[in-house]
Image (cartoon, rainbow, N blue to C red):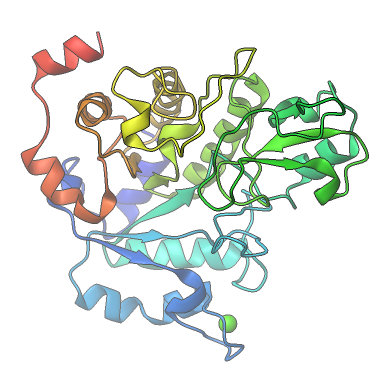
Length: 329
Ligand SMILES: [Ca+2]
């Protein structure tokens, strides 16, 4: 029996393995939901204080937006430390208490995991900025030399969500060398290089950390973009790589690449030690990719495209076994 099922037996959680098929899941943004100590910032004790209210909503689960230490450049999706609670929100002991008390009233807990990028304040990025080009520390992120006679131009013309360019010169972050680093979101959110096995290992450690504490599932932020085409020479793409540009062949530059599924297969292997731990992801709206991600769900890998309409998609849009075999042999 896994640790999680032991937790379930001691709590008020349903033992129905299919609970998620018709689930009502409520998103909590911890920094605004409820403030227990009057400092103007919502916190974990605030969530605990509102459990009677959450129970009154007949919820199956809550999904917590990031509560990790963060400078809040992107609302907490710029994570400084994946295995801690922001001191302004509480402690790990508060987290454990919150989880236990939510479970007691039959409410499961999803936490947000942000694997595409860390914040610029994460220890790994600080090490990378201080390190030399070609170093192990830089290989956890995507550092490249610039174009132009003196490397004064970004390595490619990739466009980011939040800034005109997906590249920032390291000098903006205090780096002393002449390289650029890639970020698909804000400059304070450097993208990891998921081709580096150390990155994959580190996230498995983080997922295990929260699974061991008893969380019931993870909502994966930017689930489609972990694997990029970083083969040299890097390809240019002078428009924002949205779904249309990515196409449906799993061969885009920045997202929805076929290799991303290998990551979630390894996550599934970890989660199979727990029961039930689910995965939900977001922004997977393209038809072809939905089929593939749903097939992963059939493998008990991923819940659905958008957690906001989770129950609709789960009940009505699951592909057939034949469709799954076609895309996911
Ligand atoms: Ca507070």
